[in-house]
Image (tube, rainbow, N blue to C red):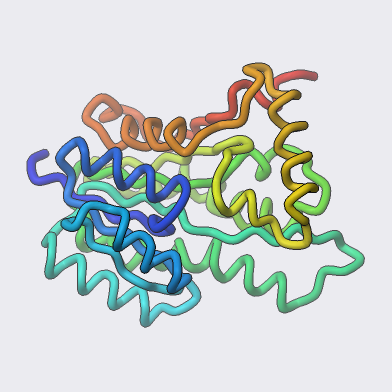
Length: 248
């Protein structure tokens, strides 16, 4: 397909921002969204000038409508939709409340579902949809039930969405990073800098490859799934974790 264009939610930092740079370098027109004003402002300074940076909150369907309108005006159509934004709220059952549950599922599940619904008319036949899930959705991590459930809900939708959109040759796949060194991981709620550094060091030491993932590791996988090289791949989850979770 010519005139490739991509929309990346959560594209103002970390994996999303790096993916925006990778796709832009490969000739894509790119739009990214972010929720935090400071992240949006930084992305506008650091990303190439022709990348469209939009502030949008996934909890607001009105914001999503505005994003779709802006993308339609700028690009006309989309060939790639990367549903990447998300929040993590480590919380155990004894302290979990309704507000935390609603926030996590509204952003990670409902927000992305309706972003797909609203952008579907913009997607070209043969387009690629990639959803960020994460290995925590299928592996046990203490205190991760909310985040895992919200991401896992998306993962269970992937095969059905893939079949539903197959008549248009639109591919739907998930990418599941392991521990990846991103700003959101380094700002884990309830953990100080020393605790986070210890957590990252332990995760790297336990990984079969002896290191954490990088945003580039994930971005290259997303770029592959968006490419013609993945034209016959749909309904799949690709785990990008350096082998984390393989040991019995």
